[in-house]
Length: 171
Image (tube, rainbow, N blue to C red; front, side, top):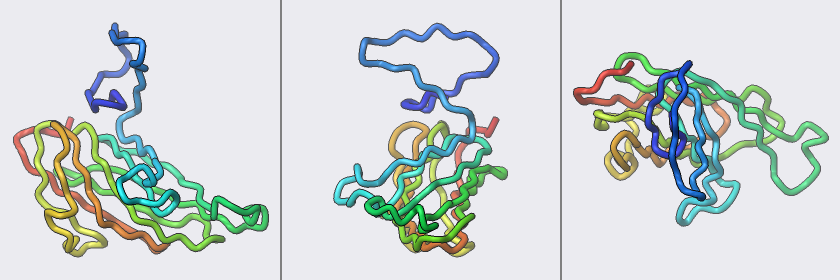
């Protein structure tokens, strides 16, 4: 996938990519989870959350977190969070689970789904329950991109299920 546009490319081939001096070709594997700090979001304070960019497919990552100020991480005061991203039918399932807990984690999570052309949002469940944030928390950004806001992570296992509708197929 093209990181910036979500355009899908088949692997094992050569492509001629054109762009200007400011364009850097950046590609990611299907299913990639790219953690970004949510400090760049309007009104967000750096370190208070994550924006997680999820690309269509199956993938996993680990996120390291500490207080960002002290050297307490040397004494084990940090956290490792395991994340997974997969699809089952028309569902995109994202999970977070602490793999190591030496630091208390409380984060606001924003999921950005990229590469889902031809779909529209249908519903979101958090830990098996309807999200409760309805249309205020889910936005279709561009053709193929969705934004899911309003998710809280406190270190306990988290499962977010996004159901998509539309005429497109997952391939």
